[in-house]
Length: 241
Ligand code: PGA
Image (cartoon, rainbow, N blue to C red; front, side):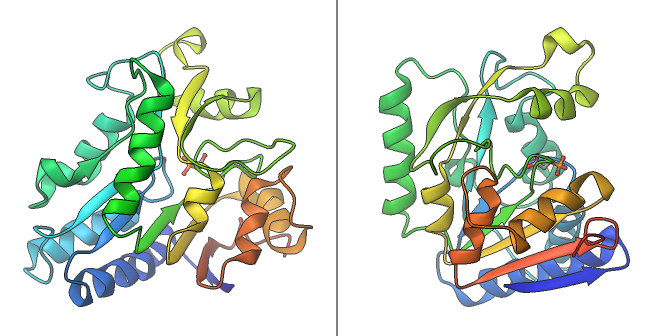
């Protein structure tokens, strides 16, 4: 694991964006796995800057997002569809045809999930996957469980995740209780992974991910088994290492 501790979120964003920029510059058809939440926002800002400076184009880039809430439409201000458009896609030259975000409300969940996994495979797999980490060690919305999950599926969110997500919603009752997420195995299939963690609330999860046993009780710990992972932390998130 390439573990680096930075002085600011902005420095983390620059370092993470550089890996993505290198991927976009070197691959003919780059495939990015993208995350929502606060952690990747500085990275997306740096990517938008690089695009505005003419350093990169997203014309040949395909993206797959990790997850989406169930029970709210894609047009909702809190959907991950909206988040990704506001924080990245609306500001770059990516083709909407190349943007893939799980549907949170598919008619047939199983069919949708296997089609999403197949689409990732057909695109050649994910070159660089961006991840945050939950306070409970989740990656994507893969919550602590008895087994590591495989492909995309519908998940019930834990109280810890629902509580962490409350800050974005007008009322606690509005926070979705379920989501569609890529599974742990699909995440591990990515050729290169960047996990970003910031703030003291993540320190225990970061410790367990890096120093703990590989266990589905801390889903991020599986990253110890991947051979090309960058963990980018601020000082607070790295405090227990
Ligand atoms: P955050 O969420 O980036 O908003 O902290 C990360 C996560 O829960 O995976």
